[in-house]
Length: 426
Image 1 (cartoon, helix red, strand yellow):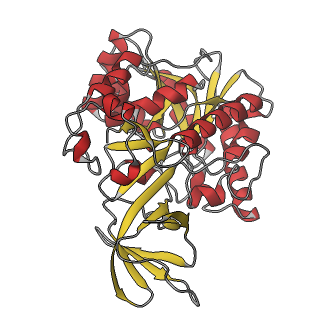
Image 2 (cartoon, one colour; image 1 turned 30 degrees about the vertical axis):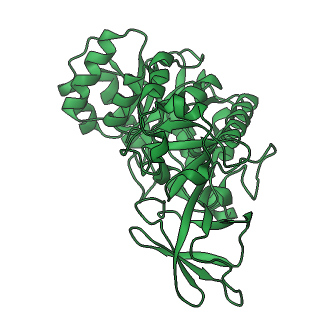
């Protein structure tokens, strides 16, 4: 296994700037229609000219987060394979690779095909991959590109059998035994199953056993002492599994990690091993961080558990106040079709009026409809917004923000000047 960063086709990424803007991209003002994305960025439009609602990316905050995580993982001796499903944005993959990412992680065949369209040279598919049509495509992709490195997960003997039956490639598939959590998602639940799966992989002419993988977040939904203990116990199981298996490569991949407990993952993956190991962290939401779930739970969030510069939220939504139908209630023109809500509702942060932008406090978003957000005054507070004002919202959970926007403007330090655009592929 090679520890150097992965590569992609930068020319293909650059060509995204040649796409012309039009009605397909919600929020883009008609004054930019007909321009390429690159041309529109060079015009430096003001975010206030965009059609609401709009979600924007803070360019300097993203660069801060990229540099922070690259330095933190390097200091800990970890390789970083950020989860690309967070953004599905090749231009952001390129920035992650520029900062030394070892691979880009995927979860589905559809995501993998996007990655390969932009030439990503090393992919970790952190999931089982049993679909015959997808495996036929993968076989052709691996055989046509000797420089393409790929790994995926297996958690059952039957899964090994299905992959072996479907495989048509000359090169074998590199696979990892996945370790799961009781009551959680995929992954073996005990050591005997892990051994049986490993034996089946070793016996398969189509597969090669190269490591062990897992995802620790299902062990706990919070960073309480008990929650952290549960995550640590799961990671101990990952280590025990590695020590119990025999692999078909001299250097073994051991990978875990979302964005909530990467401090514990680092401790587990960089502790002494009896064999040569490549420790790979897969967190993805660090790139934009957020103002909700990850702000609260991240090791580099509002309540840090490790030393280092805190991550900065790089996501901001702007929605207009369109109704004040009752005292203490305002309706914003943004809802579930625009904003994430699965790991917390948007958080009011800023108020933009004709006189400027000021902090907004004393109110809470209590619910989302398809196209409306309910903004209510907190107990004992007045609601200091009027019809026509704009509310800047902090968001929770980047993964379900990006999938709602095929094109996002990127802003400068002032939060208003648009310097470019990021294209997504969901």
